[in-house]
Image (cartoon, rainbow, N blue to C red; front, side, top):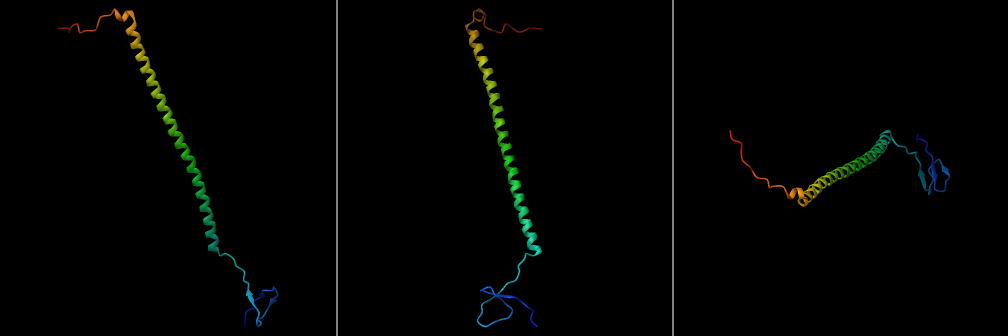
Length: 116
């Protein structure tokens, strides 16, 4: 005995037996297996994980850029302070050369050494 199958002609009328000169199409329900379903879920989880990691690394890159900019700012502030000290030293030298007190001072020479 043959298992009973339903065939549908191209015209849409169901036919239960083979007829001569008829185009028949066999329709069987298709479904995914358990392995295929698990693989699809795994791929989806992998894609979501990659998106999450990409967003996390983007935030980390911003932190590194911000840290580099802050380091550059602190370095430039230190140079500014050094230049302010240098400016004060140079202006004090120029001011002391023009003062009358400095003009009346003697040059520094070694007067001698203490003997025992």
